[in-house]
Length: 62
Length: 372
Image (cartoon, rainbow over all chains, first blue to last red):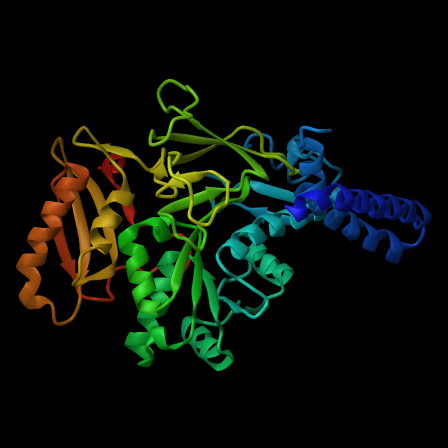
């Protein structure tokens, strides 16, 4: 399936988003509006990881 | 769980696996088997709850065009909270029917032309009965297309499912979850006569009740041992849910590869009781009562002792206009009960509307033997 072929690319983008979110969180330690919204973004990103990245990590060619 | 809770960090005790500051949701169990269990969730856990429910609703055909009415008393019980958030997540329009009474809820559903509904099977039947008997409204004309039932196994019991679907003119789907576990199972739109286990988020095992052996072959009943794979504040690892299930051998027409459990949740190990030396599951009685035309939706089972002998009394309601058929119904009921449960019953007919009605989990089974 075409969708399957894109999973690695999607997963890579998810990891990029996560990296950015974690960096933002560090920058926002004294900035509650940033820190709290990033916490929610990270929770949503975790759901993307469960749905996509975990599947990519489980694939036999990795 | 009960022993470690209500201590520091209060109220979860040292079962809490994150800092108290990370907890943002409190729920508790209904406490039907004793003192309620407190359940902590982080925001990520809560996102996970909504994600699990999203799998359920999407599989049942919920889409952004749906207007979902939730007639649930938003409170300390998790019940339909996550269903609410999941419907939002999918993009549906959600109407919280919180503190409205049943009649006001029906009027609001009609006013807003809701297309979907969530509730316990007992309450959804009560809503239909209220609409018909007290408001002269035919619920099947309200435009509800799908109903998600949870909290009790009724939507997987054919007799109850038929009553629900015919009353509302809607597809009725089952869903199973628990406060300490999460939303682990759902019926899909193919209605395969069972539910899918959400294998992506849960590890479900079936254990032989007597030997503890793990059952992998289909159509052999055991109790469910479940692990939630991504729950953090209070992890759920190899939890004995007391639910009785069995694997289905067939593949589902919906093409999902998540495993199927045949007939949904078939009972609970703590509900099954021995009467006259025979194992009795209240679900078997529900299946019989709800499958007989002429009987109302409600019933009650009372087990007591006459001297040293167990006695089962089944209280049922005869629908108006069915008085002439009473002896025929009586015979069918006795025969079916004998066939399904291998037990004899004393039947007690009540006027329609006089047996207790329940808004949340129904308590229709009363074992008075310990107290008699």
